[in-house]
Length: 357
Ligand code: NAD
Ligand code: ZN
Image 1 (tube, rainbow, N blue to C red):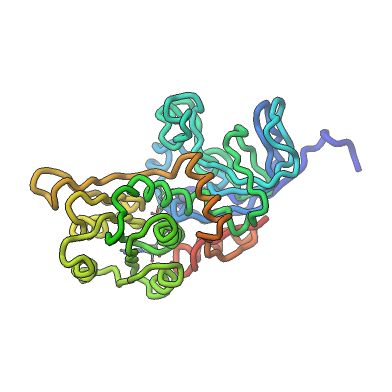
Image 2 (tube, helix red, strand yellow):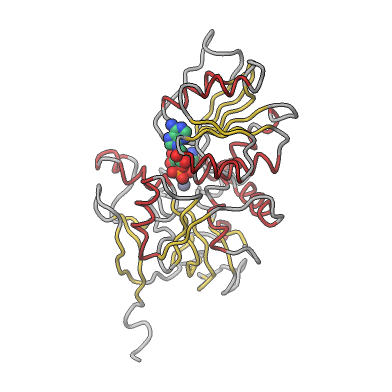
């Protein structure tokens, strides 16, 4: 039928087209990989709370962050290699891969050790993460800018593993930073047992000997937390601080991983830690926690981690391959993407929502 190349092949994409409106399916030309790029036929794309955050921003803030509509969503992506750009030799057509999302310049001192999420040059160079500026994985096809941003999946099921690229990697990175504090007898707290939180619980159980406590507002999420390995769960309210402290004879916990990150949860984190504890504010709830002489226990560190490194993503996939962690997920068709975001907003998802083209 016709002459190939005369008319571009079409594909579907879930795009955020108008600030303040729900994302919608649009038809686009299927992209062609340029030199060094790889075209993936998408097998799965994860739905993250960060997308909802991005889509909740007023237009001026959205624009100041460097984003423009229309924006193809999907920063958790997996696919099979469909076409190799000129010079790409690391992969073959048909390979099953996952996408490392926080793209950096590739050559600075952060990027060369794989910490591309910290690249201080990416923004100025116009480099954006797929789904967060660059066209993302919620489409039939996507372009990956470099082979180094792909991780072979091998036998892992792409639908079950795609969310390891963010919901797995982000808590893994935060936990690895504090791992030296997570010694036998210590207690770690996860605030929020959603997509990231339910993975954090499993990662803590897999790589540390600590007692794991999960806090959530929802009984269903607390139940999920227990099912995936939390030793204790509490309603995330004013009484939680004392209940958590009681588990440590009043001393406080060694680490808090806050997957909500508003002023209330950050404040709770500050009140439940022991001296020398580490607090990671992972959630983008806009909260902060003061550090200074006489504020809280001595020598507490507060940090705001972002995503994770390439080596850490490989480690996360190894944990999954070993059967030590797995993503609870609900599957939606790509065309039902807007519905998946509604369910995320309602807070009724169990684990992660994954879109399948
Ligand atoms: P999610 O919606 O799947 O999970 C959030 C969970 O928090 C839900 O279970 C909800 O019931 C619970 N919750 C809400 N308010 C709470 C409170 N006051 N106390 C305790 N629990 C509460 O979201 P997600 O996709 O897991 O993302 C979690 C957060 O992490 C979001 O803010 C997201 O934007 C952010 N995030 C940050 C990074 C990063 O690199 N820093 C990466 C990915 C996601
Ligand atoms: Zn995310």
